[in-house]
Image (cartoon, rainbow, N blue to C red; front, side):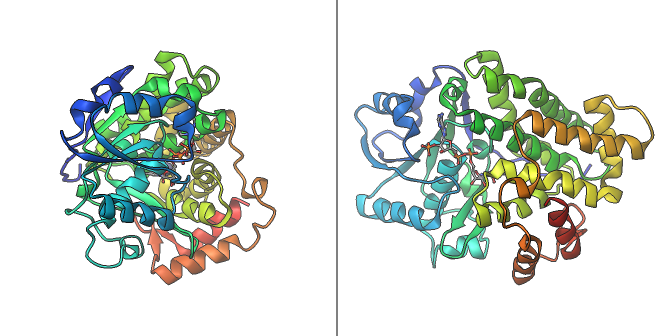
Length: 385
Ligand code: NZQ
Ligand code: ZN
């Protein structure tokens, strides 16, 4: 097993009705920026619950953080924080609102041009405005990790950043919030979390036996509850296991002591930046093609995955190949189209565009061993057409 440090200061408050604790979690006397997205929190009553539980606090609201949050929008919130002298930010929403708030928190006191946080991927270790979250969409794990992804509208770039100061102080995760989610977002949540596990699991055989078993447990739980929760989002057993699986998939635990990949995400982000395809759906497009193209290096782990998750029998080669097909089948069950041409008619130059971008950024080799070189990126994207 590789050496590791495990640091996760987020106070995760999980379960039905836990929003009642909100007033005890935000710093007493703080002036709060309540940040939210396009308004779903007004329709499902979560905004009212937040307001009811923050009686007596001075609150300024900032709405309109879009899915795949835009740098340009977030900078407006930075101005509000400065002029209103805000002490604490409360993100109420899904991964986009939470990621947006992470960027706002980092940008307020940033010494320099905040766009550098994204374009130069600056690690944010201090000077952040403290923030907490009320999660409304299980998917990203952003509620319990220190990463975020922000889109620069002007350049059509979707870029990740993070740092130890980017952990939420607390996150309230009430599984009943999923009742109002559209089917498409529930499907997205399952596939995003599934792929997060795959990015940290599907590398090469190693000695992280426990991490493998935990990762496999999350995959099995998502396969078990995923298709059902989409049909029955008010079933608490399904909703709670779905939500907890999503958090566990990307709160840092399963990546400790093991190699990780993330190439599917890096390529997938480009598809969102170019075509506006939902994040999870980009992963369903790229993931299976990546497993095919990187078959030789991933075969060992694909075979383990096939045997343990899908109970497949046969040689390593046979099991590994069938495991990719089983993964695609699962994505189809979860309502995903898995080819780029099913989302856009203008896909033909995509591979070259992405390769050029990665070249400009100096990204010569992605993945667990940096073996996803630019020619491999081209093959992966072309295979996904
Ligand atoms: O904006 P509102 O009106 O709130 O509506 C949202 C949005 O339209 C709606 N929604 C959220 N909760 C709802 C709800 N509708 C009804 N009832 C509810 N309870 O759902 C839509 C999508 O929301 P969004 O936050 O965009 O979805 P998600 O949580 O999937 O977040 C996706 C973003 O997270 C990034 C992605 O790249 C993408 O930008 N990621 C962040 C990661 C991280 N921080 O660790 C890792 C991920 O890999 C991912 O890259
Ligand atoms: Zn993701």
